[in-house]
Image (tube, rainbow, N blue to C red; front, side, top):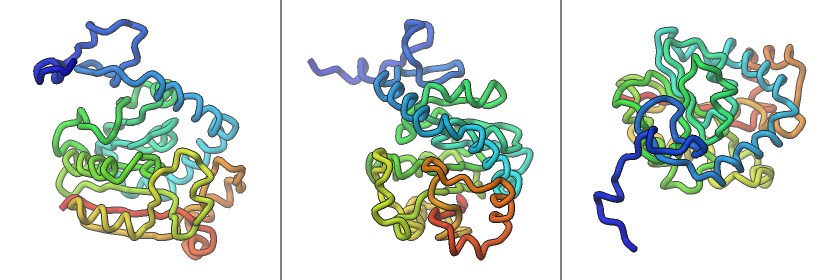
Length: 255
């Protein structure tokens, strides 16, 4: 039976939902149920992929944020970590307001109360006000979106929510340098490169500020665990990026 428009657009209030039903947002407001299978699959997948290296990954992100990414984030900024995973970036960044977005139901327990959490499909409208963010950061996430339309909708939401002059920072595996290894993770759907990201960001309305085709090595989920001292050295020596880097870094502004 088809739903009429009023039924389709009906808003669901927190109090209308059962306590056992997963919610889209962890903060108060209007929400809709998550797809239980999707959230549970993500929970198990993250556990399998990240649990063994959790402490190491956290230490690496502490270094990456301290020695590189913090320069793009003012202490008074509002920052959204898009596809936050277990929140390694958002936990370490210093900012006035920190928001993490993901579908993983474990996210709130990993980032803690100071960080606002939003559990939702990022290609759907974000419950974030227009022009309210200074930075949108995303790492190793966009390739997991199901198709190019989802990517474009996600970038349009980022553009809407960023202030004029606000930045989007995108980090991810570069298929130009990975070839078949790009597909070693079953949930990689979109083959992306620095060049395709420049194109889609520009088409969305962003002004490109920085492009690094080779930035970080491919993955910390497949046993690549260099000493933390090397990580700190690596980030300070860009010539090493050109040798070992398999992930792109792009920084773009809302003009």
